[in-house]
Length: 344
Image 1 (cartoon, rainbow, N blue to C red):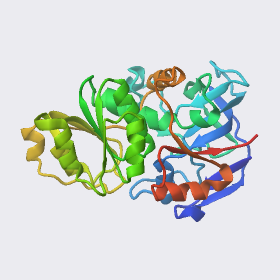
Image 2: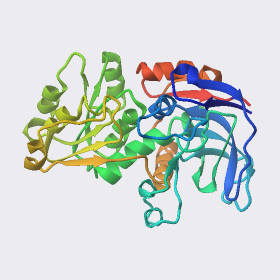
Image 3: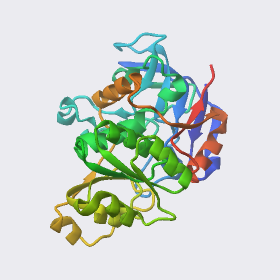
Image 4: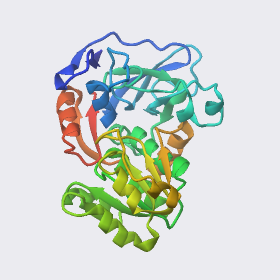
């Protein structure tokens, strides 16, 4: 089969399109013929490498996959060859206390497809049967591949961690990203009001189309001043952020008493600095979050099927253009998801 393989961390030339043996499904595993794979900033980190983290190289990247069930391993249940499916990106042990409570992100053995084991930038991928979800009717493979990681991450951040409530004011940074374009929709669906930030007027306009009440171009406007004008003296209730160092301290200043700052990443830098009097005087909560559970993804797919949430696809490229896709991700020249197609 054709597959994108990363053998050593590096630049775009680290992405090698090559031939590999078709993987065989083991016990309770399913082999899926990939139709489309959505890219995330996670793929860039896997390619570049992260100081202090060891990736199991060589590896096939790609965690957002839609396709067709091709073969079942011994004991695999719940699906049949020919089923059109979407894959959950988080793999967990299924046996520990966290997994039994439905909190798979807290599993100590949790893995991410395309980060800890071979992912979907290939013609075939093998996953546990519990990670296979039916593709919603009316959702094509490309749109389906734009759903899992971004919507699951945003959903878990807003609901499981920040406990967003109807009527609350939510600030969403980097509106053009996959996670944030999903978060705007999820927050609005929950009855919250949203202020989004983005790096261009075009991205701000797209954020408003997704439901943001206010969109601030942080390159030409002071988002703290705009957020305080929007939220008033009460301040914002929630800030959803994966930018990190560039937005952390300013975000805390936007929050009102009892506000919650929830983060799933730090693309602008990992070392956060602030005057912590902001935290204890205003009783702020700083919350970390990673991905989400299978039951959350099932709920998201139901909402997508009903049209209440919609995947945002920036562009569609063939698997052979994976280097171009990575270059555009690094340049932040996207709104929503880049999806690679894998023809039969």
